[in-house]
Image (cartoon, rainbow, N blue to C red):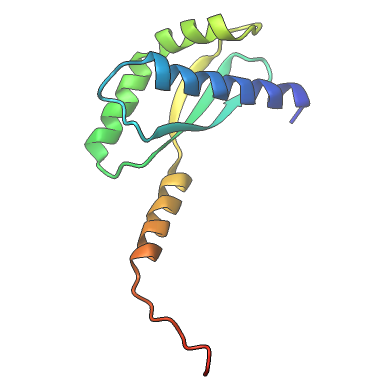
Length: 121
């Protein structure tokens, strides 16, 4: 991947995260939502926004993604104010299942009752 695309990805990721957390006042959005990755196409026409969310309830996940999809125009408008790009990309929001799975594994590991071994033995 070119350095130009990498810089654009990180800048767009930072801006979208800032827009979602500070400018969207929708109570249906979880406070534990964060943008884990952004993948722009080389022509800047499409952008896959990978969202990590610590939520197991399918109804709440669907509701969160519905809110994000309906807010695409607002997010693009705010992004255009923050970033100078040749095109404002079409945004598609995707759930980051890897992050939510690793959070779940860490919770399970914390809850295990493993007795500590004695150092004498």
